[in-house]
Image (cartoon, rainbow over all chains, first blue to last red; front, top):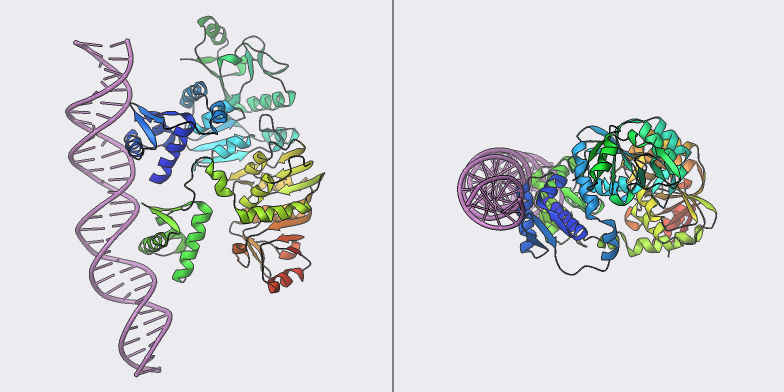
Length: 250
Length: 250
DNA sequence: TATTTCTTTGCATGTTTGTGCCTCCTTGTT
DNA sequence: AACAAGGAGGCACAAACATGCAAAGAAATA
């Protein structure tokens, strides 16, 4: 990756996320922290960003486009994603479906990560366009625009011919007893299939989704291998761990 | 290969790929790195590209966030797209593959348009997220990141089960006698298949692609139903119309 | 055709740039 | 105040670069 290119990427990330941590950038861009520091220093002296201890801040007034972006980027999700990164290694076959949290995770994948990503979500696929060591396999189907994922019989059949090491499931509702659920049956069906072809299943959930339920059950919670959350009450934690799930919180 | 010719090739590559690395160009064009460096230096002093350490960048809009949209937007392409709109009606099944011109067309489709769009390009699919009356069917496959289209055997087989009224083909090279060609055989194969399952075929081409050729033939030009171009010389116009193609220019 | 002139190219040379590592210093946090 | 995390500056190495030069072509002229 060219230096200028990398610095432009840093500018984009700072503008989008409002603050960056040098060590995070180092991982995401797959260069040493020293290089990142030098970049930040340079960009600061150009006046493009504001350098601070351990990272940098966005400079100047928020742009017009800002309010929409704020909805997309969310610090909590970014933190969850950082924790999930620990379970991702080179040469894995990842299966990733839709959702903004998953999209955030993909943005934070190291550029040098090697492996295969299978996805039915066009935004996820596009977000991987700069990851030169990742082969992206798209599962086709009928685009369900509300969540930007492909669904339907074609999707189901394509999945039947594949397998994955780790499924990163986008979760809408989860309850320790009822399980994982979602308002659309067509999505539930595909998610269930995805879980069944994967060795391990990982889900990142924000607190607002914990202990909520909707109409269509995807699977019981004990189908999850890893559950990544924000701080949760120790009682709840025990409730999940009793089922053999590795629960990660802060 | 002549110097001038080589430099033009470099310009084309930079425009297409947004960045180049000197050592890559050296291999691709089969000249020494010194020569490439001299070329890049020259082109930079002409102001055509932006020279950076170890390569060069495309000039013009500094890729700043949402200005990427502006970058893709190009008046010529927009004009071509406007003309293409005349051939698109409600309740058609459209097959649309990749390319920035096709993406521009999709952006200009009326929000109220009713129908079906089949595509193997994630950006095209995403651009249709606000068209509530259009059903989007994505063809899966292995994502070819350079052109952001899905290719491969899965793509081919999925296409075999479908048909379309109008195929809007993204064209890289066209010559009245040689036909439509493209540098990658995998893309040529898919485009040929797409043409074969569609009743009509439409292509928008900017003048810089007219009368150019590359290695892999997609199909002869007379497979096109409509060819939309900028102003072209009457002789060329006749050349195409002789083959039964409806040629639209300004 | 032969010869001269000019351009282009590749190679050899020393120089500069970009990056990672190391050591020592600074900052923020407990 | 103690301690860990972050940062500055120097060093080292490889990759990329500029420059000069000579050989190979191309173009022009005799």
